[in-house]
Length: 337
Image (cartoon, rainbow, N blue to C red; front, side):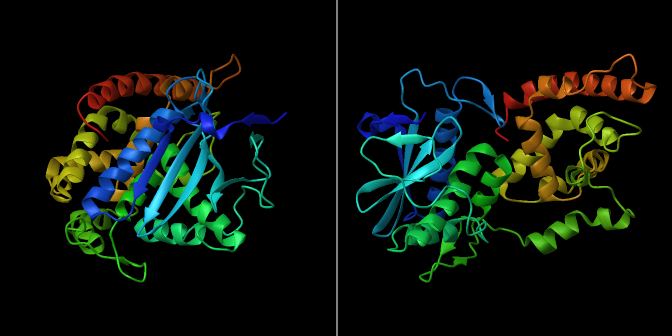
């Protein structure tokens, strides 16, 4: 049974606005602030839903409104708090809801389109994509407006859910030229990532077949720990070195420089953790900072039939989780990763 909700009940503190008519520094700050507010509103209380806490609608306010503005054009979307999903958009002053959403606004008809992806993911993330979304959302073609919603879904909803996506969008917030394409910005792109990063991580090329830890994320999961488990050695190192990794990343984010990575001690830490690039350390920290440790520890419990290898693996995970928990508590009190 679909729920019927009166839009007039959405209070002002559930409505947000992002203006793209700002300088790069201001826009980056305001985008990050918007995502943090959406996370807080969507995940303030309740059960865990796909990695974030499900919102508890004690006040009966299940919706958030986000308006994105570029020059004299703007667009508005409605986000359902409990699953962080765009359910519809405003067109010609009226709300339109996708036809597969089990939620209804009083007096609003369903669209012909559903909420699933139809145009594929946007090829870029950042200002250029957001500008494109605003322009598409103001098109007379409903298919264009649908694609605009899909772009906003990635930039807003997926940023709320996944820290690596938010970071990638922040990197993509650069100056926008008159034709809507991105331009390089010297203030925030203070180094040539292809060349300078190669120099800082030149030791990776020197070590034949260096095993980057992120390769394990691309392999098929094996939660039952049958046989030997690749990655445990790096996991153990990360559990012990999470504080150090976070400090390095915090310095890099604050200065935009690769200097924090270019020391003998740091290289030693990165080697032990299987980290061979900026991308790797960013993804590792994002994953580790959001991981539910108790859920990880309880993902597999040995039985009487479990092999010695399985039991040893389980004991290793429990040990690492204990260390990791203490490291993370210390770091989160000092750094914003």
